[in-house]
Length: 502
Image 1 (tube, helix red, strand yellow):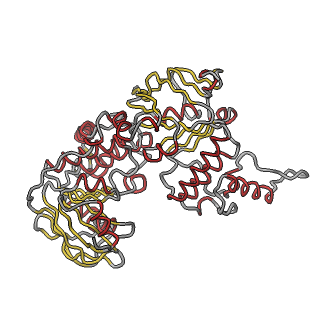
Image 2: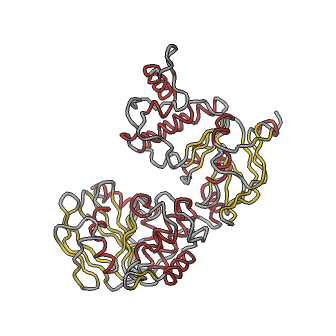
Image 3: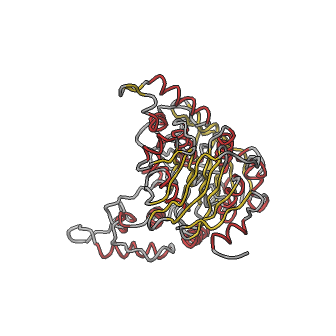
């Protein structure tokens, strides 16, 4: 069979701009039936934009799309569905007040022969059959989607997409909310689709997944194709270098170990049911890592220091001054800021612009007699956009249209604009790609070098080890060990977190 006939999908010269900013530049991409083709690249590289053009969610500015060698016009998702193209995005498209069965069979609900009413027994059985066939059995098809957890909603989203047996299935970060067991079930489904000659286009920033499931990987950078490789013929370090432009060994900036004057002191801090008798110090320009297993109390601790969930006993001192932290406003006025682990729920106002989000926590500083000084506000916003390399650099762009990595930079910019002396970073690189992680690590290093004290909470051991000057470990809501840079290792930190003597 010739290469031309095997290329189920061909995209030639695809270009796309948003508000004058070029997002895709003459992208050429091809993929075959019966293939799992991964698309990798940093946040903002154009991965999701390219796939949204293919699925009809947005229009292309120029270029052409061919299916089996024939030009197609995918003007909207309905046309894409008719061509057998389905997509599962990071943001769910489910209807919360409808049942699992209604969502899976939306637009194709079976009806009774006589009066054309919905045949509910038949619909529920059909939905159950689909879930069982794809390996997602166990869900109650009569339950409303709003009553399901996020991982179960992801299963419903995938079931809805494959119910019509698509020729091309686009999966955009499908594993972000799935457990390891659920991910195994998803991979089993993907391999079955591949055997049935479907083309699966898989977007993920988790490289171990990409290497396990993909036949080929196409890398995008700055809206252009860098290259296409086969996992068996390359390694993760090479792929990272294609994405980032630097080697894996250069990801973490070098930190100089030295004594630093104390800025933040926490003494015998407790919150009933959350953490007990916590004492530690944080020095000026120091990065202290906090590691622990899920439920160890790390997030509750930083929220208490920020005044979001006030402690019931103990004290927090900033530069030898005892703080009375009853609310986040108290913490902000004192010079403490918290980047929360869930940016969309706690860190951003998705209906507002980038500029509005960045200035949100600094309105008191840039106002006089209740009147906002727009010149100061705009100058501050633009400076942070430039400092953090937020793309595109357009303060009026709605935050919801930014990539995940750039949204995370906006959250960080918001707190930096407050001129905080202490930054509490709770999972600061969660849900971002390797390239954006490298940028965030360098930003953290620069902030520490400028004198900002950073408390880094992270579940990623390489991140904790690579960025921290010291590491504290929490287990069962208590601090159980402190490690210097020289003492910290994966073995020692995991042993302390699990309560095992090494």
